[in-house]
Image 1 (cartoon, helix red, strand yellow):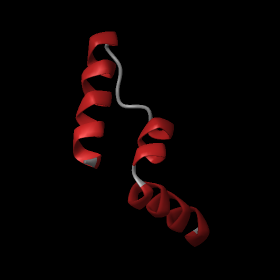
Image 2: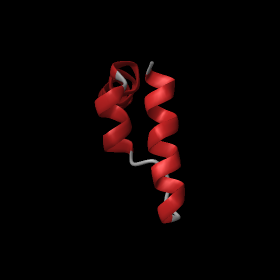
Image 3: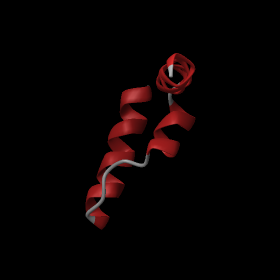
Image 4: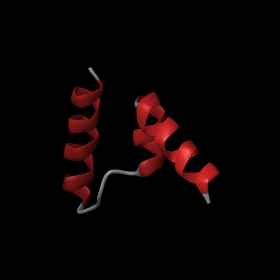
Amino acid sequence: MTLNKYYRLLSKARKKGLLVDVGELATISHAFLDSLVETDKKQ
């Protein structure tokens, strides 16, 4: 399910000539959001 949402975001971004927005990706994937938080805590 998360991959399907990612691919929709990717398709939308490519049409605009952009990369997938990190904030949008974090809102659809709790695992991705957790990895960002964990990385921030290590610094």
